[in-house]
Length: 178
Image 1 (cartoon, rainbow, N blue to C red):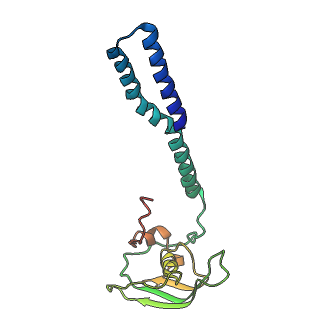
Image 2: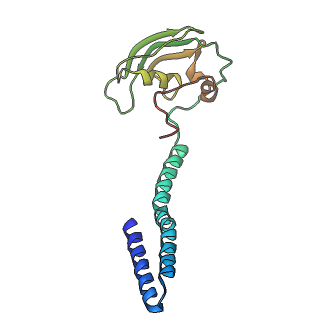
Image 3: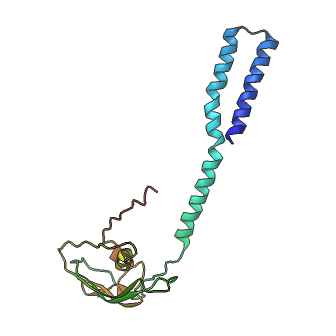
């Protein structure tokens, strides 16, 4: 769209030159006319790019609404209960998990006990399953087999809202600003 604005600006300068010649304007008026053209040039150029920004915004908005309208793969059980104030004890018991599109297990026979009040680090090579463990803890997915518990409560028997209200997560990447 910028070349079109450049052509229009060039046409405007040409029109100004013709006007100066036809109207016998002096140099002061000519330069005033050219200055006026250049003053309105940037706003017109910015305005010409507005449709590109609007198209990108429309695409992003469509994607956001698609996410909001989607049905989560993990649903609360009809008799799900609120998680009481958590002490922070976490247990992964014989957890095996495979993503829907996966051919192999992302996690296999994982047993992990995290005691309340202690600090732990979840480290490993890329693809080792760190994000999968956190996704299971947040109940973004349910394990293929095994049980994840917080304070001896099976996560599948808790509301996702009450669970996630008690978990703080800081990821490596800042998704808010991408």
